[in-house]
Amino acid sequence: NAGVMQNPRHLVRRRGQEARLRCSPMKGHSHVYWYRQLPEEGLKFMVYLQKENIIDESGMPKERFSAEFPKEGPSILRIQQVVRGDSAAYFCASSPIGTANTEAFFGQGTRLTVV
Amino acid sequence: GENVGLHLPTLSVQEGDNSIINCAYSNSASDYFIWYKQESGKGPQFIIDIRSNMDKRQGQRVTVLLNKTVKHLSLQIAATQPGDSAVYFCAETAGNQFYFGTGTSLTVIP
Image (cartoon, rainbow over all chains, first blue to last red; front, top):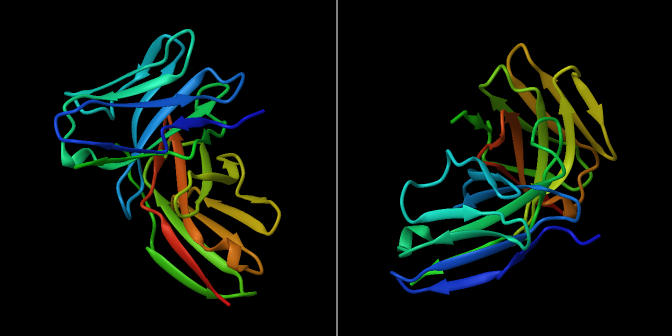
């Protein structure tokens, strides 16, 4: 049973370009969470999705950021018109049920660098 | 959002000694807590969890203590090894989210 798979592991984008980060949850997991981590800082919640539904996006910036988790395929975190401040590690986690009283399994992250 | 903070940003211990990493949380309604370990360049890895109806839980070389009165969580690592060097995060769950602290960087001195 493969773990949470994120790709790409490293992504370089120029300012103004779009970044697409992919996350394939563990088999059987229908809940996905995205977190952002700046250097030397903790993990900041961004969004919580179930298949085809956004459950909680309270941590998402109001502009340029969007997320989806379609019925088929991976979850996508999309950042439009990237700026240098978007440079960070983005982690995806999945769980079989919601976060209440269950651990979430993390992927290895995508390190986004905006130049 | 809720604040989950750590008392110490860095901790150095001698190999073979015991390590104690502390965490304060602010949401008294949180009922599930997890410790994660994050090695450089990797994603967080589950270490141990504890529910709010417990005050202690033991794993292999690790023990988590929960004091709900003062909203304090600690991770104890017995006989610390070089492979334990990493950043350790505590996380609490409230609603749909995990709230993570800044992390404590543990360095094991051979």
